[in-house]
Image 1 (cartoon, rainbow, N blue to C red):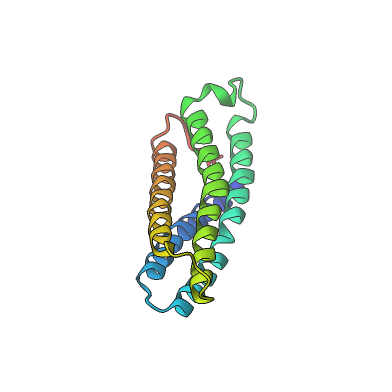
Image 2: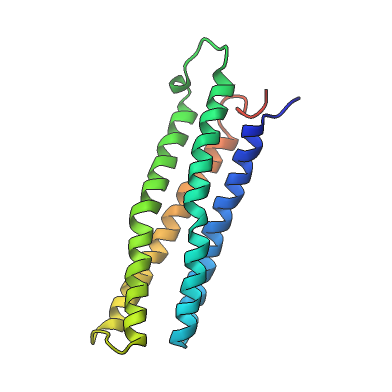
Length: 167
């Protein structure tokens, strides 16, 4: 059995995406528990660096996924969109990427802006309430991203066809 390079890179990209999800969640929890504003800002800086891996893994997953689809249907008479599990996986992946591109960064930037204003002592009077609200939204964001990721993994493992990475 031979395995394509695209398949191995796809697996590595899944590892990077898993790492960014898990590290982001852990750093978010650490940021919430931290009483010192300076350490909150430091933790947010680390989370921002870890968050930069997310677009990299999304692009690499997209490119290697296309290569895997090409490998799977190379010389086949059937079309890729005839595989329901593959179409469902692509749709869930698109939802996950758009959710990660739109909602995650805006929520995290909003919270960081409030934390900076607390540090500079220019925060609004209801800053604690706003931060708690953003924290709840960020928790929901991580829960949705994790569920989408787990659904994608489930579909990938229990899809109805031979895995695209094996030639």
